[in-house]
Image (cartoon, rainbow, N blue to C red):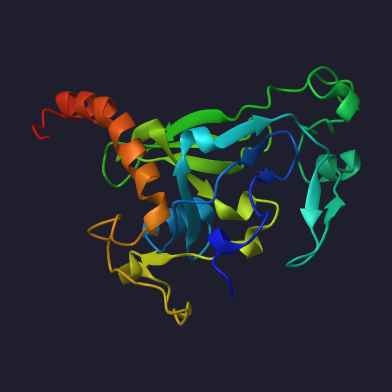
Length: 236
């Protein structure tokens, strides 16, 4: 199967949350895609691992809301979704998100409720590093779309591949934190595996993305210097 970087016309690719309020466009192919088996990712996702595409934060463009849709099978089409108010009431859901329409993307939805901004909300949660992890989530359904980690801060986004409209097109490049891998997950795809984090990203990345990686590191230099100062840590 061809690598995602070799597939023609794959990018830009759109994605978004399940309720349709927060949509985005990924303008470039990922720099690298992680399949992370750490206990923190398992807890965040409620699953056995997380698949994160590492990209420049600027490679993600927020889009306006669209009616909610769901993918019908790998390679399938997007089918409309909806909410039955009676079901929400019977299950204690309480709030029924308005369904956006193209004519009322930023003003009023079909239920007459004002739509929130299309941009995700940023919330910082505790992390094993004790520094924190900032997640970008839909302000309505609270689905996490991407994360900012302490390494590059908000200069690099770790985008949840499952929120893309064609996630089956993007396979992981590397498995990390396999020391906490769930035993029923078989790693037989031939990709590099590391019990923790890998020692060098540049050694795993494709040659054509190395300038992008260098640009992220350069842009994040000021952020890291400020973080080191706060932490009382010296370094280059």
